[in-house]
Image (cartoon, rainbow, N blue to C red; front, side):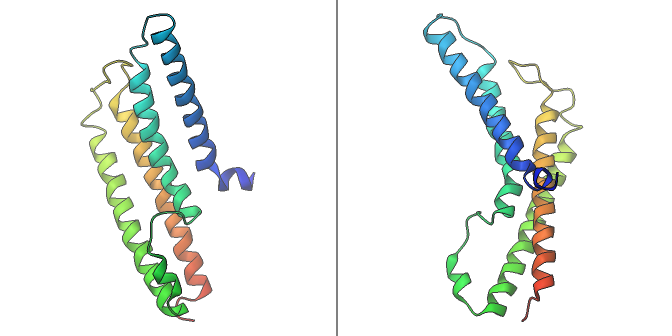
Amino acid sequence: MRDMIRGYEDTIAVLVLVATFIVVVVSVFFRYVLNDSLIWAEEFARFGLVAITFVATGLGFRKDSHIRVDLVDRLPGPVARTIRLFVLLISLAVVGFLALQAVRIMPILSNSRSAAMEMPISWLYAVVAAGLAGGGVRIVVEVVSLARKGIFR
């Protein structure tokens, strides 16, 4: 159970990626073999990629795989940890701001629907907000871990 909670981003991202892949393959089959097209497939693929991007935000923080300058890792321990803490706090502020903006725009777009799938656009922003919130949780966990190790040791 703990591993499932620890890697929930992996599971969600893989499921959305597989669903997007299947829809795109079926769409290509329909377009080139049956000479017909699924009008909603491109929109589904676009929304799927957006969902994967934001759900994987937490995954990137958990695996420490976001873009960074490796030169900082070569600095003395306390300096590197202080810079790491500073970067994490800035990341938390950015992720928090973006999640808040996603939540704030949801009611504004509550009556808007996507063109092909007729899906409420606010659902997409809910996925964005949830993915960013998950990333924020991962950042907080990393900050607590860094504090437990002792920032200035």
